[in-house]
Image (cartoon, rainbow, N blue to C red; front, side, top):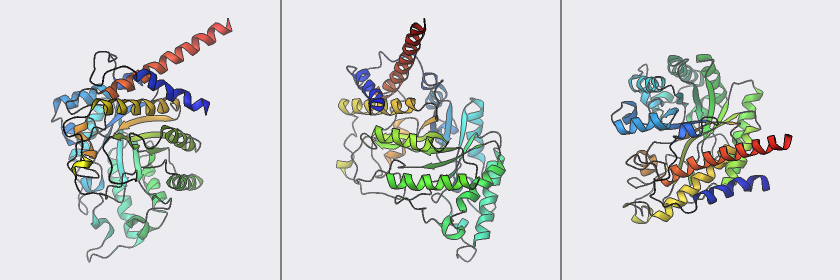
Length: 392
């Protein structure tokens, strides 16, 4: 208890006293510079950035981040919309953007139950295909997509969100048709397609005890079978209060014990009230619009800005505590205006979940994260100096 509680006190001290809209004391460093000795800092980018339509946002990505993930351009429905037809135009541009800016490039994703066209699972008569047919389609897709970017994309979310909330494997068409081993097959195909790429399992709400238990069982089974899996992605679609920083800390430690690298892959903090008590990122969920679920259409009040800053400071304190096993922290979006939370789980809302506002300016949360990075370096230097003094 004492080991964990100390770093969580620090953000509250650092955040005391600065105004929500103040930018005057912002450290003259970027996110990627602040954490250059800890982990890479990424952002999920959309078509506007990939095609460089918004010069200011493109400049922001280049300045602040050294890793990128694609929001949609590498998902099956985008890159492989019809049988035998692949569309790599946007995906190629995405990879070129990362290479040109010397970024760590993430491939998201190869196998998922959402955003996969229905034709993948059916024959010409509309009936479900058999196991061998679907395995063939999976292999063709993975070899074509991952093989195209061999040596360019550094790591792949091979399987996305395969564990249900109850801890059991999700009963997706992949599982219904192929069986439980569809997951192992996906990793085998990905490793064959690009033997040097890092291969990840990515999911949300892995702080939930039942779901975490199921994910651990899945990963242990894959490891026992000799399947290459190098890391687990914790999506961290969080709220101002959930999951607790303590649970995030415990979850990272749990997966670290499996010998895996841990990535924070889709980080954001929803500041809006929720119509459900469930904390998840199940994209099929949607609710009716109502003013009570969208209270900040004219801007985020200063008290909530400060609360968001404290939340991000707490989370990054935990991430830094685990810098030895965390290889990447990626935000799901660049500015508040880009965020998927403006449409999920209710369309048309105005959310403020990221570090940069709709104009691309750093928010108090941005300043708080930079200050946490600086405070950790000061603490580390002080510790080394005290150790050196004690030695002499």
